[in-house]
Every structure is written in C-alpha cells, then in structure tokens.
Length: 273
Image 1 (cartoon, rainbow, N blue to C red):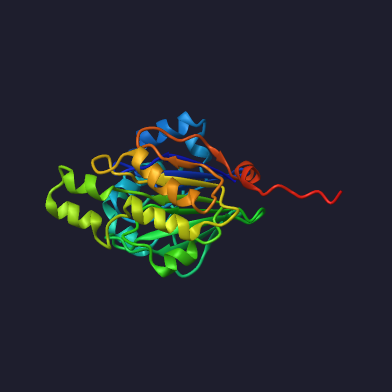
Image 2 (cartoon, rainbow, N blue to C red):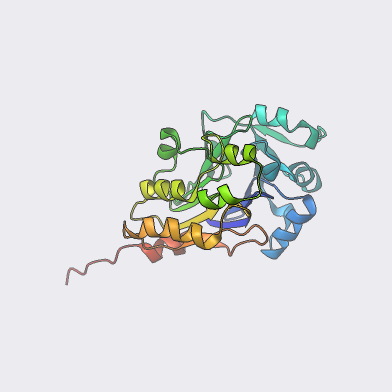
C-alpha cells in the first residue's frame, strides 16, 4: 500500500491511497483544477482513480468532489446526511455510493472502516483503510474535536497514522481570529491541539507504528516545527523509531510505501547461531 497526502490544512484536504491498480481518494477539498495539478505532481492520471470517499461536508474536504466525479467518472462514497448537506456541489449525474459508520466498505481489496468523530459537521467521519492482501492499516483522522473512546479504539494498530495537529493554544489565543472562531476551534467539537495530538499519538503507539503524519495545521495558529516537536517528543519517550512528518497545505508530500516503512522500524532478528 502507498499513501500520498495531496495537501492538508484549512484550505483543502485530500489523501491518495494506492494498492496495486486501485487508487482511492479520501476527500477532495481542492478545486477540480487544483486536484488535477496535485495529481499530476505525483504522476497520477485523474481518470485512473478508482473511487472518491468523502468524510464530511465541510468545504475543505468537499470543494472539488462534484467536478472530480463528473469530469473523470469517479464514483463518490458518502453518507446520506453528508450528501444532503453537499447537494449544491452535485447535479445528479454523479455515481453515488452510500456508506455509514456502522460497517466497513470494501473497495477492490481496500477495506475502509468508517467511525464517527466529534466535530461540528453534519455527519463527521474518520476512517481506517486496510489492505486485505497484506493487512497493512492506515488511519486518517484530521477533524477531531476530541479523541473519544471509539476513536481511540478504531485507530489502534495502524502502520501509518495521519493525525490532526491543528493548533498551538498560545498561538490560537494570539491569532487574528474572532473570539467566536477561537472558541469553536478549541472546543470539544472543533480541532485537536498539538498537545492533544501528542497524547493521542502516544496512546496509539505500538512497536509496528512506522510513520506519523501531522495534518490539518492552522496557518494562523500553529507552526510546523511546534507541532512536530510537541508530538515527536511524546513519541520519543515511548521509543518510537519512525519519522514524524508535517503535511503541507500547498504541495503534495512524498509518496509513502507502507511496506518499506514497516521494514525500517521492524525490530532486528536475533540470530540462533
């Protein structure tokens, strides 16, 4: 399984997952033209995308979904409440596939397990994606007001974790945002702080965790170095051996090969001779 964060932040989010010839997009929060540009940057033809799965109705996750679906004939997976909330982005010609938080969805060898989050959207979902052939597991949780027990349970055992690390509390307090926006971001229905992300990452740590990617950073209330240091220090105390990356809003990240990353953190084998 390969994973590419095409971009993440308050102005747009999208993740590409590849397994053989299967290519799954999770969210399309950029315009159709920008989605095409980002896919071209990682040498992916848009018409080769197998499916698009939408996690919730906020525009930074849905902006380009209608254009992407219509222009390249890509089926869209979404919950019914999210579809209703996003009806203005759709014209009825799209190939829609419904899913819910109750049971996994299989998309040609990729098992997508959705689970409810606490966020101020109509029907907020995060997902894990498991490759059936290898058992490799990816977690994507970028809009979390708080890490509930079901969220913690769903994200256990991930090989690669894409986790929200939205804001630094001091920078949020000093930011230009109105007080109402600051309160919403910091609330239990808003976004995870760096400190909360560090606590969650520590709870999700296990010896096979190969990579952590911090996502959905606020441009006005966070800095990549602060987020990386906050989460990195917490994981280092647990002897985490993998890297901590920060996703960019502007450009796609380097494609991550989960098999290669797992090999890098695998414990050395003891010789019997």
